Image 1 (tube, rainbow, N blue to C red):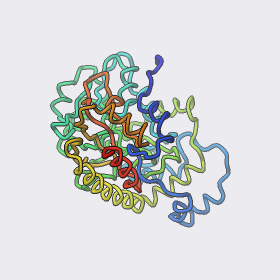
Image 2 (image 1 turned 90 degrees about the horizontal axis):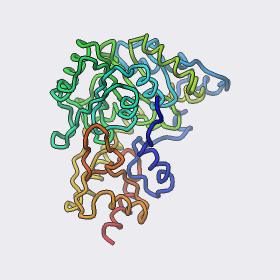
Image 3 (image 1 turned 90 degrees about the vertical axis):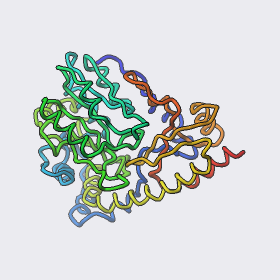
Length: 376
């Protein structure tokens, strides 16, 4: 590994995430209080919480947590689960375990930067496959086939996508899984927004469920709205791969926080309640956000995304999206993410877009500040 480049989005967040008055680009769902989460616990897990011993836990993750995670998949057992301190650690270990200097990888664009930067840093070559706005940001399997090389080792996808909220259609996803299975390619699937689809019919299978080389990444942060727990995981039936990643974790977090593992177990067992609540909030916020953009048709072009709690709106103003986002945060305290933070080394990304979030409550307060800035 060489020195990694600056993580543009996270550097921007370091400057603004906790100082801006209105975080209108948050990538996670509305969180909950400790008391509200504990109220969802059954007697066994409440007792586990009350009697926590604050020592180390297992590198793979506590058995109860791995069992609760496995229950969210079809045909997956606790032995197929490796836990991490958030999704980023899992992604990092997976890329190092899957790729080498003689390998080729394929990555969808636009993306969350580390899903591109790590393969570019590790692999011999990487090809970007575009999610095109004119195709509602959906994946075209023909682009994937055209990008294949004899040494293609890995294909990386993220649906619902960050930053666009797009989801591949069922036929395309099935074709992609079949292609990977036939060619012995690992399919790394970032599924952190799964469960927040606008229409349940859009919900894709999880890659780990489909074939041995399917690698599913998930976390408590996004759809569940519990980023403070810092609990993520990878599900995969390729146990040799999981063992390589587990050895890498020895150099990173070593193990997760024991209290967080218990709390995550409680949340996963109550996932229907939590996800129903978050989907309802997202649906209501999408209506509010759509109405807001409708007030300013000369400034914004907006299509509600397929899933997740972020979307990639188009800015039509003459001053350009970079200036617009900068003035919004500096003058009105409204934080958005301009498309420069999603630039790719592999393919061009639309330069007139910004990421907006709609997973948190009280969205109207931020929209009021945004509206006042426009109308002043």
